Image (spheres, rainbow, N blue to C red):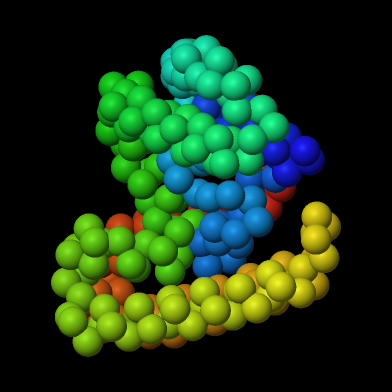
Length: 223
């Protein structure tokens, strides 16, 4: 039951977009997509530090909040019906996430200014780290060769295995700072190896794609 409660809270957090971001922080080669659940534009937009960086207005925040409220209302019966059923809970979690992604993506360019969208994309790529280098559009922008793609994939696969081994040592239902530190170190080391595969021109392109470094607060507060 505790797992289901966590699942539904997570679904609502994605659906409402503006809900508290506590527990969803982390970033790319530093924190990655692990314990706190992602660095998509959705999860970034609920963070106070990101909103401050983007200089978002109350009106902009309110529009994203309204989108979240509409999604939550749309799926409230499905969430209630899935209560107590783990499989249905996972299904509705995905449905809510997909619907929210679609709604936010559609309205992103109309709610945010072009420069805000551009900076959001830079922050997203920074936080994705290895995940960014595996994105098809990034690989195209960097003009990665087949050999480079294969090398990066191998590093990603090795990282995934290392992180899985570390997760096995994680006390169930508890946060172990030592294991988290090892996860961060593993991501950092792997990301450095991956960027080392790039030539000087590709590194310059990567710098342009990611922009000025954004220091995300690990436990950044949400809206």
